[in-house]
Amino acid sequence: MEPPAAPAPSSRPDAARPDASAHPAVGAATGLLDGYRPGARFLATPTRTLLAEGVHAEVPDGGGTLPERVRSALAAARGAGVERPLVIGAIPFDADGPAALVVPRTVRSGPPLGADPLVALPPGEPEPLEWTVSEEPSAEVYGKAVATAVSRMNDGEFDKVVLARILELSARGRTPDLAALLGRLARRDPSGYTFALPTGPDRTLLGASPELLVSRRGGALVANPLAGSVPRSTDLAEDVRRAAALLESAKDLHEHAVVVDGVRAAMAPYCTDLEVPERPTLVRTAAMWHLSTTVTGRLADPDTTALDVARSLHPTPAVCGTPTDVARRAIAELEPFDRGFFTGVVGWQDASGDGEWVVTLRCAEASGDRLRLYAGAGVVAASDPAAETAETAAKFRTFLRAVGASL
Image 1 (cartoon, rainbow, N blue to C red):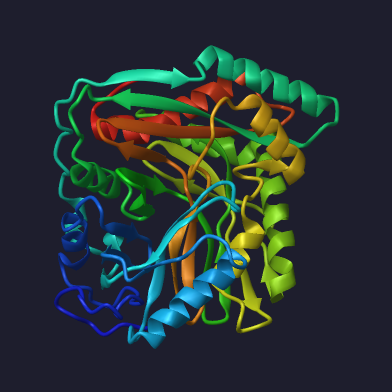
Image 2 (tube, one colour; image 1 turned 30 degrees about the vertical axis):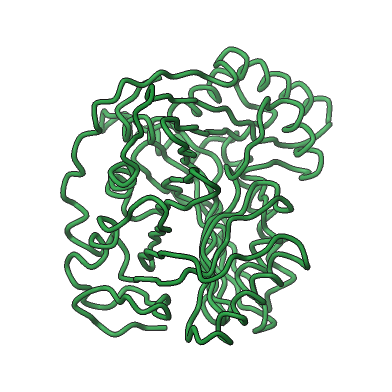
């Protein structure tokens, strides 16, 4: 899968698997970012940048498991003459719900955004739209839901639950510039996972997630669960202090350990060996510090695809809770909305089974003049409702700053 060095990204429909070359062309990745228009499918990861256009085939709902349907769609595309097809798109939080996955008609691909020097250029200011912002639920009601969850955990009902809330933004009849919004998100965190994907008529899922669910490259598997976080500070000394405190926080280390144990248990049946570091490290985004553990494994069966493993991992305790079934029920009781694609999965996979699937975080769904923003926080028995509410507010800032709005 090592790509040839090239002066520009490829536009062949089968050229969808390159990784970063030793000397990526300047502007190759940012050219794809700048080339995005609503209706296309854009995905940037630390290994590649993809811009897909058109639909060769949709992955149907029903008729087998989702990995089986993806295999069938890719096999049919190869039979139709697509030499190296891939599937790209989004899977909802409810993995049994309708996915938005397609085999695109054409794919242009290039090196990762983080390897392109032009990504450092300033993205430009948000367009001057007058946003109306509403919360669902309000910060006060959300805090009460966190307190209820903590009480139920202290009663022994479950160990962890992730609770989310929504901001509804309306531009009062003016459609926001999604291409410019995507550019600001990507340039703010170019080493992360940035995406813009259609999820229905006049609906686009945009985001900049920090969390890899799982990737497969040949026989190698990698997962990078994140759990336990703290908002960053604009004061450098305070920011460093917060990062150091996060590494020693008993509450956050416990929350992180629960997630890592869940990932280990889900990956183990697929692997001949599995490596899990004893202690987490830190991941920094523009808005947050996160505890991070990179879990690596070697596939026992070469026919196991990235999506096979992703389906077993999803939803992780990082976005749902534990035990999973009990946490799901608590989410249904305490969240007054349907998550849709938030805390679902976005990514790509090719016919060999290689691919990258990412947890759908720091995201919004755009429709007409409206944006629906999502943010959540992991709640454990030691959680403080005010702190968890503040964490969701900090996570909203990724999008609020990108559109020029405030909470």
